[in-house]
Length: 216
Picture 1 (cartoon, rainbow, N blue to C red):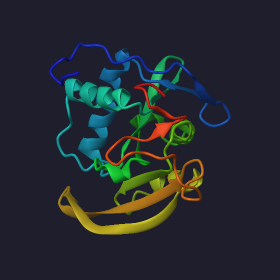
Picture 2 (cartoon, rainbow, N blue to C red):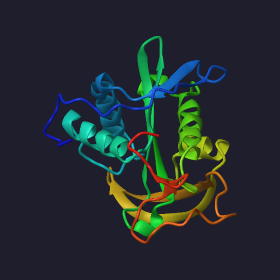
Picture 3 (cartoon, rainbow, N blue to C red):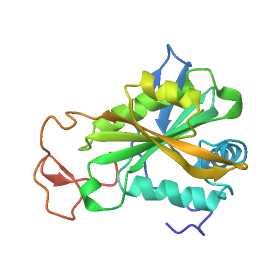
Picture 4 (tube, helix red, strand yellow):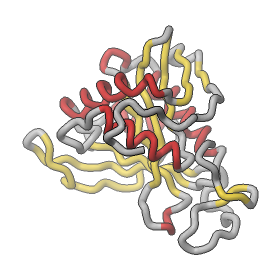
């Protein structure tokens, strides 16, 4: 879907629902087309006020839709947390890098509405995202945490099984200062304990002998 199609529909997402009532009392579900205006606003707030994202100009709704569609078309999870019909935040996975040898590694992103932080929403989203990723052929999940001072994100990922694997010093410049990126990682499924099913060079990973479809 092109980024100019601001009112086009998203691809159909899988309808399995994950919940974590003990933490945050929210429901985690697949993204819907009518979520996009709220997700755009949530992300714009983080771009304008924080260092979790290294973007400096917030993308518009058409661009957010295009990014979401690209992930769904690749069979990657894109989840939304809500309570009583209100969207509280969202999380999604992307391919870690475009080159084919990275095919078994994903990267996560989690963004929470400003008035919904500290309520367990991030944990509910990230745990649901991990579960979705483990339903596929992937073996590693990476977090690139913007800013070594981002204590909340670092603590969230640690609580969800990530370990810190490195720090890229001063690779970003935003709000008049240099910013680090903290690399965190956790295994998915068997991790590197076993080899994946045979896959031809340059091809995406396969599951149960069949190529992945656009829906998990």
